[in-house]
Image (tube, rainbow, N blue to C red; front, side, top):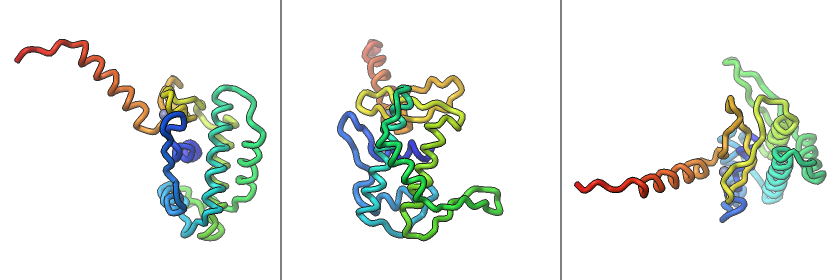
Length: 179
Ligand SMILES: [Zn+2]
């Protein structure tokens, strides 16, 4: 999910937070990996991106908890969605690509992310918003599992850390054989 991977660029929000887009170049890199290639990004555009990210996080968290959506977050998401002028393009191979109005238009890329967030929060897609069970994370993620019982977000640190803790606990329980 584009919108929830984007909110994942700030991880461990309730622990030692890790900012994965500390400088404009890192946002350019992230966008490229996600099919939204821009050739430049100003510090102001990075600020806007982070504002959108935190707004999506706030709105998705409220939606997962079935709380009222925070009005300011909804405003930011809607503004970003309205400002973006990216066009969905169908490739000859039948894939969707995004064409931005100009290669410096980070706003177009943010518009695509905002629209993705809207479709997830509005319940347009097959899945359920949930919060990561890790107390230091609590990221909102989109659960598309059949049973809708996924506990961890997509950051592999969360689920893996839990698995490792369980594994270590089991190791301790099992007496070591004398060999
Ligand atoms: Zn998590």
